[in-house]
Image 1 (cartoon, rainbow, N blue to C red):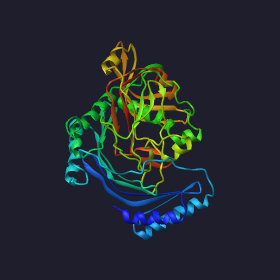
Image 2 (cartoon, helix red, strand yellow):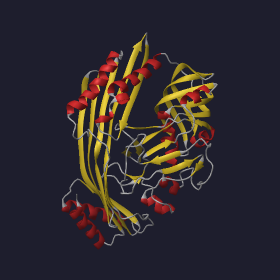
Image 3 (cartoon, helix red, strand yellow):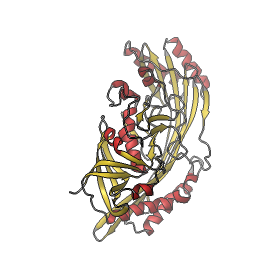
Image 4 (cartoon, one colour):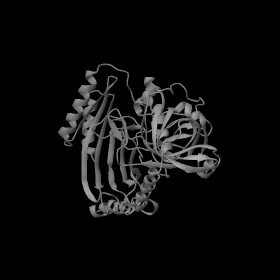
Length: 463
């Protein structure tokens, strides 16, 4: 789309003596509708169009961005990037080599793209979810529709020309129930790299709202769990938090190169039980966010991080791959054209095991089953504190009384040793509402996995 202007910029970059030059265009739209207690609280449609220019000169990178897509605007951004790199003086930064391919990636099977859908159709989604929440007795109901879509084009001085489509849509429903002085709340979100056709069947707005009501009803009668070391069963959505927040960040190549990750120098080492396989991928048929090429134009291959307990790999951008002597994995990502590329996850999840969820519960004598993550924090060494919104006590293979506001604490590298069962039911979630934050940048990601059982994990509750 911008080939003639790119040739001019890359030619000018060559005359400046740079080792490498990259031009990254983005044109995207972000839509949000918030529907609160039967009224439209807010509605936005934000469009973004601009370019980022990155150069490598004398061993250092320079980056600049602009909304001005004229030739003068592009050349000015190149000049600013070059000045930034030159001002840093000599350095040792470099990029791993990639194939100089020319490809255009599109997401297949989209039938009702949000760019072509009428506003009335989007409003209908939130109104239908609201009516279900209202009829289910919600005293307060919030429904959101969101979408992010567009295209990123990457051109480099090596001859790389890659165009990649971006798309994620979602509906979220939150219900608050009040009964006899007690309050219960529940939230359910479904997102996918699909058009509005995604919201049918068990993903229809009514079904999303009903799941939010189910959690809220359970929370009404739930109490705090007993505290102490327990057997903990995590359902897919909560499993994904451990995959992404606790473990995935430890595998990011910039942290590995800097020495801040506890996984440095441990490739081939047994870190977890044989039940544990963790993957990061740009695409998976079971769900999540579709990212077919990263923001450096590198195809997003399936990267195995842990295989049957053994650490197999890290996640890399072109820069971190070069610095560590490894291959790029398609994990160079940026929030927008105005941000430089850093190492980020895509879809990070535990792979399936051989158990059904019913078998895991049935074979658990005493423990707790947990669902619905509700925030938390993680340290650089993998130490975590996570909250689960709802769960159930497990006694002699049966689910008993509900529990709520459960705190889990531990270290992921210790926890993974105690995973003794993994289900077949892999679910991978994504959302247009927020994403993963790092160094001031937010990107859309997916996470998930199957139902897992951990035989030893610290639970915070009542003694």
